Image 1 (cartoon, rainbow, N blue to C red):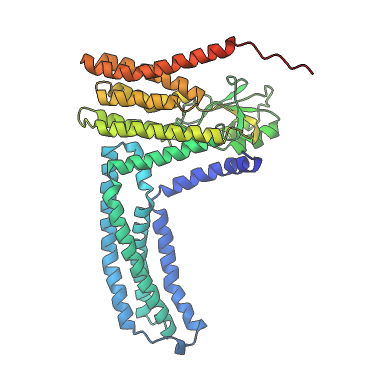
Image 2: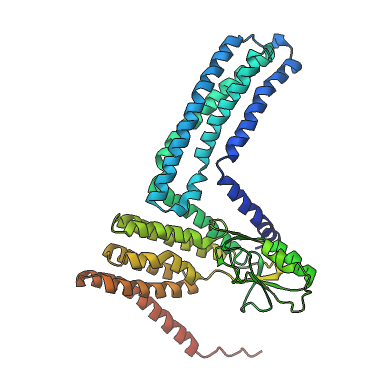
Length: 451
């Protein structure tokens, strides 16, 4: 990774976090649409000052008034109907998948754009109709207003058709899984590009002056550039021990300042606390593990006796394989990480922890299902073939754990033998790798050539 690309990713990390928070707000796009609607209604008046009336056809006020009245009478009803349908889709997504997927469903662009179009069209019709009835427009202005009204009609129809197609899928389980997968994939790729958020890699446990949070919650984002500036000012190094997604409390340290002799009056600890965004919810953008946890929660709910949907669990196992394959590829493409913030040290996410988040709950809850147990072993075998040494070892470890769960839960010997036969491939893989390493170590080192 180049110096410039690492710098851009590090600087824009905080901005990306806050933009994602704004996208989750339902009021933002309708507000923008309302402002644009008011501007459009008054912009038609400019035609009266710019162009002579002889260049425009004379559009009667009655025809425009009829169109605007139709829009004003229908758009508010459609907007209310849209809100009701969206709320039903949100509730369906939370009940069929997991409540943690709610921010992704709320942030659906098509639904937000449709709602914004309906509300904006309603406000435009009200403002334009009031101005038209009070003789605000002359002949050019009425023609431009007529064109804008036709454009608003077209936008409403297109938005309505797109919204109907999207709302039919918005609350469905497969659509929610796709959204969570996309969010987890983006977070994992960003983590592969900046595993330590552009800072140095912390190799030892935090030492020095501990800095504690003032609130209880999850770390959502870290302003690493702010920590870098502070470390340069106090001529020290800051070691971060709470990654995004970590649950913190006043007794758990956020970071350590390696400088021992800090003045009593220094504001350094307060500035460090301000660099951490702590809230009661985890986020998808800065927390790759959260997307894996949400997918695992959906699979666990599908495997519950009340639902008994092994197909969804099997589908999510395949999703995990895709995510880890893409993550491993992204790590290979970005193996040369530039240290942008040399005075800040951050630990990287453990691959074993990510496997725990993804597979442990499925291995436990799906242990009594031979289909799920076999698919898990096949997934681990696929991940051992990627050529990623750490992933291979972690996959073999979790394969053994899933096999132990299956041995305790499967009742028929035939089913257990089917799972064991698949799991043996992972054990054989580990044995072949161990023999290869031993053979390479036993070979004598090549003699240097004589000049």
